[in-house]
Image 1 (cartoon, helix red, strand yellow):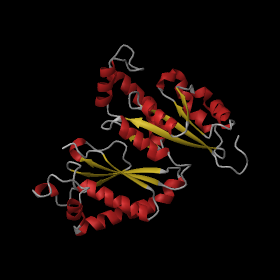
Image 2: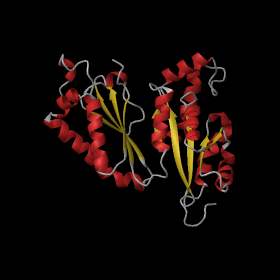
Image 3: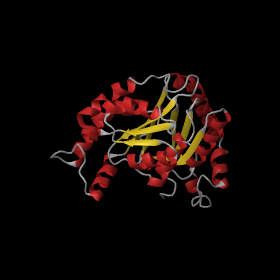
Length: 291
């Protein structure tokens, strides 16, 4: 139990789809100083966290829980609800990926899915998604690992968990290309394809939204500033409601056709606006370099 008047003990619950990167996320947390417990049966969750919190050498604990727990996995929600909210701050990290990418990973590793039984890999994935539905819906942080490598996943985990318990809303602004699909971990999706496309300018085509000339071409459009101001205002309006509901992380995805010019410049500009109104923001570019 934490001493009276001290900050709540930090708990990170790491879960999600098999093959989506739980082990990589756990190692990233361990490198950040978290005490990591892997594959813990949900029935032992509260007891293990209380034991860790009583140790003077452990300041925060990350618990990896997944469907390998079998029937015990169904007890996870009640185990989480049993933790006193005045003593523990629990954040749930959910690792997601598309069926296509997960099937490819299982086939390359030549390992069966834990719920595959006598069927196909996709059968196991379907069972797993149904079991994890409530956890995903209520997760604090959802990271889609379909198109990112282990180094990018580590950076995302570090950005979300490097600081102490968040007392304010944290945002991730993610640029993407609609031709590659909408990010599944987005809370809000903005479409900037209404802006003129620098791709059609031969002088700008090979540059990206990170280059000044492209950024100027995109952001000098009168509608661009109004649009980004409006989106920043939406986050400012929603901030208190998110915090009241216990949501401290929000992902805003900004898309253009290929994720190279308009969305990149707009994501950088929105990130600056959100920081200026006191919302800590990380800007990432999912599809930059794909074309």
